[in-house]
Image (cartoon, rainbow, N blue to C red):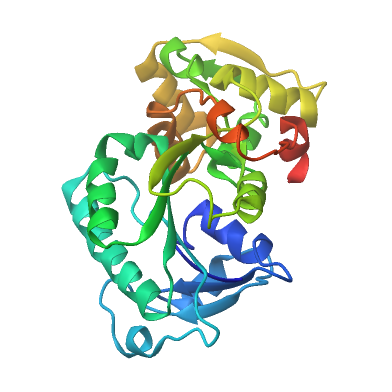
Length: 289
């Protein structure tokens, strides 16, 4: 099976180019600046990487060709969030160009992967896919986690301190984080020619827990004797503490809070009626999956 994937600068995209390619699943990844992308990845790619600009097109876009034809196209959201008009307009352009590239290479099946926070704006994406007359599935996922994910970096940085300041509105957010490698394995195992045709599905991980419970699981798994103590603070004081004492990269903190703002637990029972699948336990994901 020949597979084309775009959106490699996302966390899921970076993991995909090293873990989605199989003996019978040949992955072709496209990225705007190939040299810059290679300098930022930490895992050795197993997929074939190509320089293709979906925004401005150009000669690489026009010349791109998959010799054996395309069986499956995967588009992972390119923009930080669809809720901003500039981002949404850019997403519309790149998605339309990706669909054109897919069709030109014989592709008739497309997966569009987005985050839960994009759900209020997904009707725009669905309209584009329907007008393109291509068989599609829209996949809305809980937060993807694993080695070097934004949640992983955030939690590990907090564990280096003695105290954990928090406010209830953030600490009590419930979500069902999913291992990025589990999600890629799930994509590999679904028969996309038969299942989830022209529909929208949601997928989350094996457990529902709060942000605070996730921190405790990290501590129990990595540093069971850690003396970190939780301290409840007003939100504005908590934010000041994070900036001054915890040295968490500002972009990481902003991205994590943005992602968690619209997270909620997902019931996987609908798709589990179609495909048998077992998740990796979260403690194993934390250790280094």
